[in-house]
Length: 616
Image (cartoon, rainbow, N blue to C red; front, side):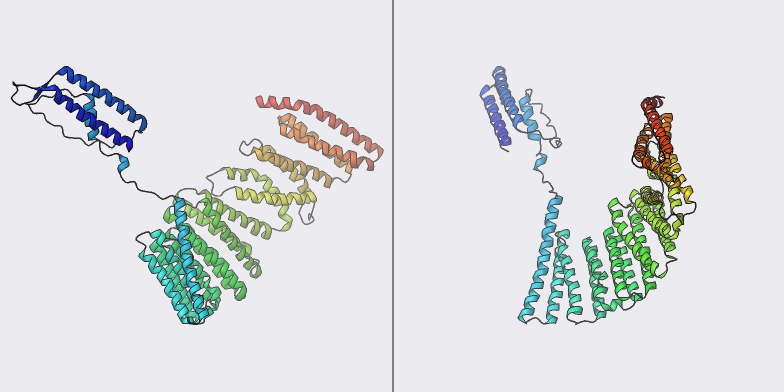
């Protein structure tokens, strides 16, 4: 501002000085009828040159201090039409600069700028607002406590004062809504809490109203909260309504008199909150309702209604259908696929539903429990495919959520409950064959299901069965158990050779190679009775692995044989030589020596063979 004022003052000074010099240079002319002055051209040009030089220095000085700002578009000025009686001298650059400067409007910085509030300031104001609303609620509670201690507040007056305070908070928020809707919404939220506490206190603590009136009061306050939530476009009211309505049966015995009434009560609220979540476009509303419906009903069922398991099964099925429909309709109506965080919030609810329902079925319908679990997985998959078809895109988050639930049901319901225990090792053998298919499913982003949940499930099943094969535990009921001892290493090597040529999944090949080596050594230990001959079999396995690595140019396979040679040599030297006959001892040592020497010779050639095969 100082530079701008200095520039204006300097320009004005030069302007008056210029015209003062012009007036001094003019002399009256008797031949001009208009009475204009005449001046000497030389003196005028000298004067103008000096003024231009001084203006140039001023402009240069101002240009170093003031940053350039883009001026607003100039408003065109209508040109002045010169009269024929007046002749103008050519304008110098200084006068042109003065004229242009006078035409320029105010800079953009002079216009008022809309101030935007950052998220930090919003969080701070929200914290202050919630703190203030909480303080008001506490003040009302302490006032009631003071009235009780002093004896001038009867129970009826206490409840009336609490109801009046809650209503005052709601009315105050409504009056402030036009000024700042988001901040004003904090007061009615506190008022809703006070009204819920008033209804529960009137019934539970003072007994002034019966159960029917308390139920009506809870429903009325919940509906009021939903109306306020729609008015203020805030999900806080809906969350308060969910908490107040779903926890009401815990405090109001009238609501848990029979299983049918409880099922109707929860189902109606689940439908209402699902519809409200769709209108408000907030998934958190039906998510909280889903968790509370399952948890509170399960608590009430186990404590008061344990014998009426049919109603509990009906309730769980209804809740699954209601909230599954809400999740699908939310994505379709808003054209908003489920995000990763939202999928993460849905999965614990699915686990909770599965655990509660399967526990109930296992106690009362054990034969049908796995099939009903499979039906729930099929329903979830069908709903996902329907939403995927309507949206026209593949949602990775929902895809992973559905795949995880389907994998869970397959492992628990099918593998652990439907499958006979004797066939479990054969399933593990089949998973070795299907590992390539699972990896292709994982890498294909357009497939119906995600691969990682099934890979994780298959890995767990495979580890359990490999440990069972290695330890030869509980193999009496397994059909053809001796054949399994041979097939596990054979299929392990086959899967390794298949997977190592796959560039995307080659990093998993070493795990299959280790599985094949360990299975082969364990099979030899279980099938051969003489320990020295077991060591010889280990040497044969190591030699075959080294030869295959040399032949195929597979350095990884060749290097893995060193561990087999080491284990076989240690076993022979530490355990086998002491318990064998002299002739067998000589034979074993000969085999060990030849194997180790030949293996070392081949291993020296292995790098060259690997590089040659790579170059070809």
